[in-house]
Image 1 (cartoon, rainbow, N blue to C red):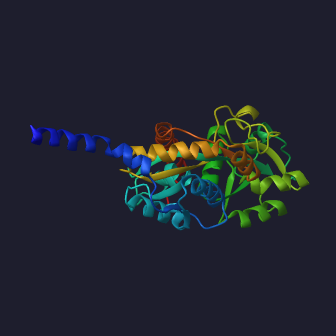
Image 2: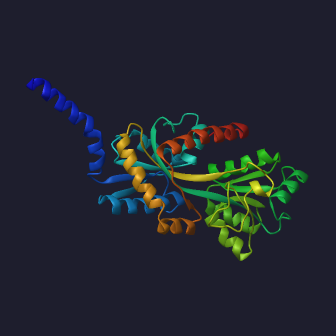
Length: 320
């Protein structure tokens, strides 16, 4: 009888231990990887969330920048880390859905190797044009490109911005000449000088030049107007229905992280991201705070892998 009661007691302890573990988490510092160099949008978003998590948990959440290979280095590090909730990564549309097709030998699987927690921010782009281009809106840009196939140039910096343009030209059935740049620091001066005619640029980098009159804003690439620049229509409402190309930033843990820890992280991040303070901070950076359940975020990743994979295959954009 005693042995039987002892066995029942042990079983009960093991049955409740995951929940207890989740309640006790975290008991030490958390590493939050940014798979890009300091100073960019991913870094800014991560540092805001990390500081608020530090305040909430009473444990240090340390941001670690591990840039390289379009985010591959940092994401691979996170995917290989122990699934105990003490290593997180701020993934993006580029590091997960786009890299899944862009790199034929990607060292991690964007779906199988991660436990999604929640998206943190959306960063739409703004289609901007040099004032010398005789196109004041999307409809006029499409008409001009059809009249001058392959002659209208567009600049981009990075795979996500390039593929935003590729999706646009594909859906509009037009030909535009893509001019790639290593970063926004090179692409924006080329646009301002008139070296290139248009660009798919981040809102935060292009909006000041639009307000000064040095560039013309045509439309934002999100599905709905962005709070960061509400005066601009979306591409979809401007003549290309169904178009959407928005970068998201979202927190992931390694696959196999206990569900109770993922839930705890989701609960705290959602609370943080819904505060007016954080929403206002993100708007100043041209971003919009957003939240999901882990299940919703997982579905978004899978859907975007399919969406951007089709674009990558269509344009033949495969990295080494």
